[in-house]
Length: 203
Length: 224
Image (cartoon, rainbow over all chains, first blue to last red; front, side):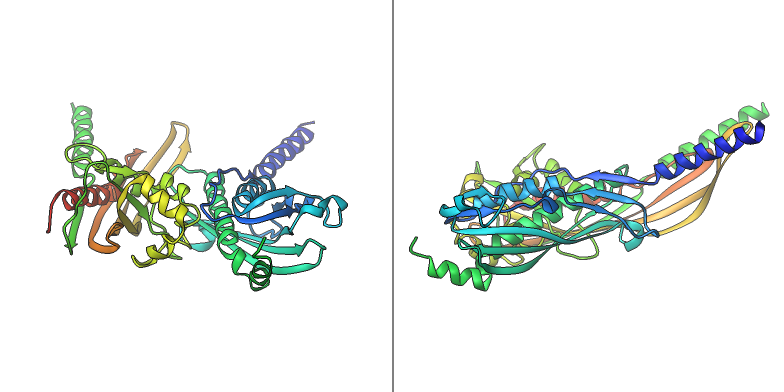
């Protein structure tokens, strides 16, 4: 009886210890509207479910177990940045949709990779985040126009009494802001897009 | 009597340690190339440089300097860093911010950016670069839980160094008009006799005060 009770106690303690090891973070932040000149085109943006619900789960057993939900925050960022870049932005589910006749170009972002470092790993007392995006732009016929990689980076120093979650959230928000900055400032300079814009300059 | 004396000794020790606490040495240097001309209604903005890969200028240091400049005698109109950076997104992000005064020209070719500067009525931009770090730590404190409760014994000490440099840009005349550096060193102690007593040297806060006082002098004084 005593042994059974002891086994139950050990089981409960083990469960509590292991449950407590997992850290979850839903990234939350505010993203400002970019101050840029609008391109006079209608953009159709495609957010697939991978993008909308993007979640990073740590698979390396040597590291702390983290689950980082980025989908909602990055959707908020792109929904702030794109309307500032184009006269009109519509959300579409599919490039081939017949109702897409008024759209000039389509844009489809995708997260290729997310990496982070915690202070114990860098010895720099900083949280660091890298997000590698694959951006694709299609013309109104659905043909691939441009395909490029945009890498975003964010870091934040740890502060006294600040939780790991809030410090990592801050680094994530800085990385997302960096993604927004990179997209806004580099979009027209992507050679294929630059050529397309030159061709359609009279619109 | 014996116990009373020991208690007095402990109190005296604590008093001595508290009196010794916060000993920080601050060194300020200033170079002023030309006089400042802040007229009523004009503002300054203080922004942290965040381009280095191995440190980051702390936002709390920037807001500390801003708060000191915005109050007391000869107070200045200071635009909060985050308000300015958000309103000019994405031009003042860590990887897009102008590194040289002449880079400002590129930004001002955008009418919307130029308009934002006019709305804020910015005359000077102060870029602060640097950080505060722990340079040395030693000692040890052991805490244990016994029948009499939790108790800690030992002694710990650590040194901190703060190094900051402010570059002052004249937005209206598009030139660098001066630099101020603020360096602070301090040692913190943590004796533990049952309870740990942290005696913290306010290194970053002292570097902030030194920098802010000098900046105030810089803006309220003509050619230095």
